[in-house]
Length: 252
Picture (cartoon, rainbow, N blue to C red):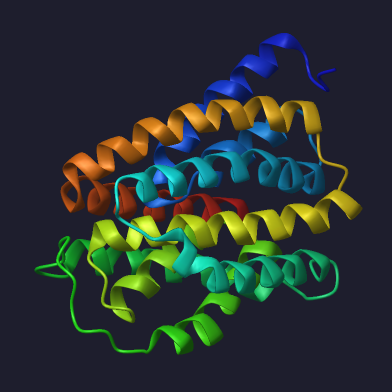
């Protein structure tokens, strides 16, 4: 049984489709779905937890789509995914303990920095480069940090995974996007597990939105694989900038 009226349910489903499309390419789908959930009458905690429900559908679909086309070997990512999952649980469980306001103040500047990096960095394409950090170190230090943030706050986590793969692991833009999705799914799932215990998500709404996410993510990942960095870069710049502006607007 839906927790909202039929017209609001259709609005949420449409938002989830758009979020799945955007998130499968550049991350930032929460920029679309979280405000709509709040508009539908969810409390902040209900909105965060319901957003995790629908988000795992889209991230899983994108991860499988990229893997099916050979852009990522999911089995080689299982260790990193387990770390992201545990970090997501920890972040969500500590959401009422750790003060997040200082992080929220800094986050818009970080997101604008990410947008500037991808917009201004010359020669940033789908070609792999020399890595600056070993895979084991990336899993041990970078993945838990972003996974913890994903459970604690969430917006922009996909972009943070992405920039980590590009700047530290040396991946090209398309390969970085493909590798981001399983980790994003894992930390989302960890956050969902914790929020399910404390946040009372709207399960029916979240699952309905999740099915729409599947459709959006399939379309988005197909376009990203067809066009590559020429699509991913501008969309990543746009979503990071809009998310930063939204966070600034909330503070004001």
